[in-house]
Image 1: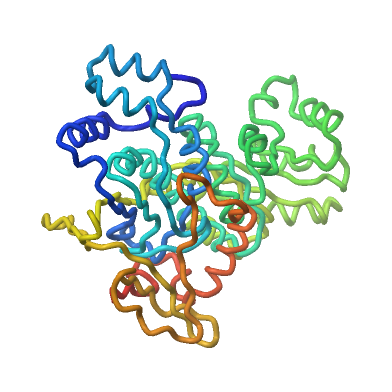
Image 2: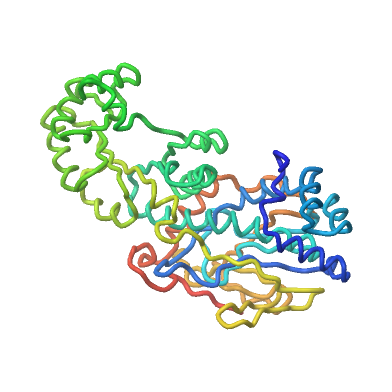
Length: 428
């Protein structure tokens, strides 16, 4: 694949549908596709939109160059007429959608693509693969951020997933309030602060734990974080303070009963005069274990596996459906896979106090819903006539948007216990 092209990040059947539509003359029919989730993962009360920025970057490189066309021709995926059409492919339609960091609920029109059938159908797999992954990770990460209740969160899941998924996951974590990531590519690509010190292997390399700590402090300074559970934690803490002094930045505990160990570590650090030394915990943490540690003297959490896997929900379950052809609503009626025809938009309704009460999804071409004083429209323009809209919200804007959105949901929606979506979706 051409280095910069994203055109092959798609499914075979997108191209065979295109070829068939070109052959029978339907490829140019004006269409509307919607990306939405029929339901949230079991027990989740809200979802977080993420991946829109990555999708727009990928859309800019969705081109069929000579290498892609040669591969398609050699494998006879499509015919000559389709190859000629793909050679000139440039998305020229319009896209609107929820900005990153916005909450979504069942039926929310997270993204709407208006284009010819040929142009729009090609984007299905690209859009779904990005938004399904990123929204799942961001939804899990947001629960972790809420559970941490303001304490620092470090994303460290790179070694538990695909190398590109690791970069995307770090971006999602930062969107939801994580402080930093261990992934250097995420730092380079998205400007996310990076953090990290040493693993157990570094301690085991040295003849003694004290030698390892001394080497790390000499290289990184006394404000570094020393991993103290390679052998005996209490002795590790004692040695760490002896080497670095009472100004040691932090100690990290990566195993065991973290609540008990954090309490013991705090008492020992205080007794040794290291009252300002922070305690970082890691080791298979998820939102539930983070919440369980809320009353303990923990200053920061390192989260890996559960974050990059969506904490049990690795996909958001979003779908991309054709809802309008030639201005006429169309809808799928299959059992358990129904869709609602016609192009739709959405607004969120709030009380005067700022608490969200419902998501109103309505047909763009139908009667507009009655607007209340505190309603807020949710979709924003993303692409116009094939060009990405300038000055779209940044990743940092998304962080702020999500922070405000979570404040607006009823308090029970932030609990980790399962339940129905925290606000209902109303179809006007």
